[in-house]
Image (tube, rainbow, N blue to C red):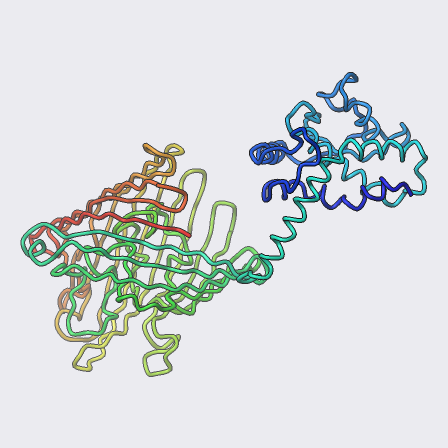
Length: 537
């Protein structure tokens, strides 16, 4: 066997790895004095051009290349490599589907070397059948591209060393770690009941998410969270708070709640643990900690993101937060009935891990829900039903369960690629079976809002968002008093404006303001300026 041909076969893996290596490591040496190694920019340009033009396709004649003429230096070599064996060639060269070889580009020699590699593979099994002329042609091609192959060998060596380093220090072969951190400056202004009691604060939250996949289609999410958010002073909650346990909270806690709230003095804990896997036309969700309705079905709101979306928790239909203290452990399923129709069902409970009386998976409070999601074209529409059984107990020991049936509609319509409008409406009827004060009888609750969003305003990746609506309020109540337990009878109005702009791919700033009138029927208005900085890593 020709020595030159044998050496060429040894470096075939180097040629095959050219595309990867050229983007990772610089050339280890220059074989000749002329600049024979493309710059990193040229290599990346070649890689991008190859991806945009589609996969290489087999050609059987050099005449199929529209950009190579008989007068070109590469014509004879291309003819030998591309022509069929019946025409005296090797029938092994690949070109672009548009019928070009692109020999006039700056990367021609590296491109040609990559094509030559496939030919070397093609002749491995038929070396004995090649005539001396064929061997001589291959040797000539190897001499012509010896410099390029030497450079590629050096780069492959560097790549192999890098791969060995990564393998020796890899975190996991199945788990990917990502994280977010939020820094937020805010204050509460308005009437003296708010302004005199609050000061400017700097609060923060951090999350670390471990996403593990065992099959490539499933996902085990383990999320750690720590933060130091505290509620503003004298800002009442949406619900009356008698001497009950914390599960009395059924919508969001405060009018000044942030979408990125955390609570806690940086008591780091697992705040989310979920496993999801596909089955047939659907997806199954098993939530062991921190599971919410919005983790299973979409909320139909592009403003619903603590890191990148609106500033307040009034960034989506409140129906997704109904019974949120009954949402922690449970299961759900989504079924793709068609390309634009999905059915989601779920059952969640707050004490599914507790074997005590009026606890466990099915003997305590729960949230059961279903949603139909339509996504035809640029329209997104969600029809949601939620049934909540809240089994809270007052301080006197009286068991005072309540049932909530809530019906919601949410929509979002993209008018252009950048501009969209959305909104929601929600109606809830409530019945409290027993208990003191006004937590006995029937009640109704309503909420509605409109949203606007404009992307890429002033800068690519930016988002201007507007929310205007009415937080959940008590519409009526029957015998026994206001069974809904709501502090608001309809006078409050929520308005919010924010603008997110990206400093880099991983850092964004979001200034904004939240304004609420007649908070909880107190006659006092609340104004909250916020500056949020989000980090993604």
